Image 1 (cartoon, rainbow, N blue to C red):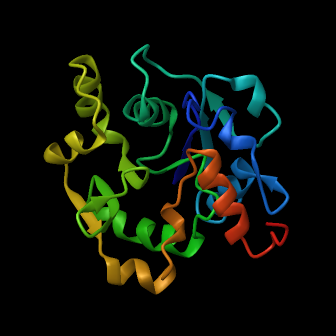
Image 2 (image 1 turned 60 degrees about the vertical axis):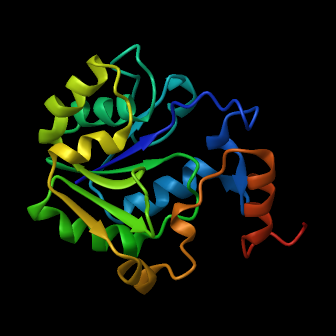
Image 3 (image 1 turned 180 degrees about the vertical axis):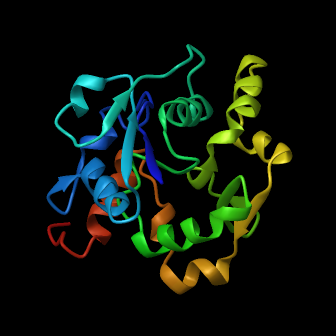
Length: 197
């Protein structure tokens, strides 16, 4: 299984590259990579700043389409992956839970997509995607239909329930992504190793 990290956002709300903001003394991207490394065999980072990630033990690739966005990032990662199943996460999710990711990986065999669902909210950037979805995703990108959930109508989807999630991550921190300075400060203060706030 391959881990695909999407790190191609424009960071407009944060004002700086989120991946390298520090939580507990190290960049968020390193927390993400560490969580994935115990679950997957290979990691792909999809970014439009490849030089910034050159020091990491990962295949670093740039968007395969000029139509940017998370769906293009997923498409690019799947295109470069040599595995049928791939865990897709965002670079600004420093509290990923390896046990939850492993559990999701174990569910993947009979499905095209495995994603958590909390209430009516789906977590598409904390999911497992099958490589054979490439034609479906490519068609949607070409039609400028870039919402990730649009792919689900043409896929066999396994939703991970709240009770399943809570067995591994009862606080549901896995899904916390940091888009603004306020969210970053809150996350830094919540982290058990950060006592300065």
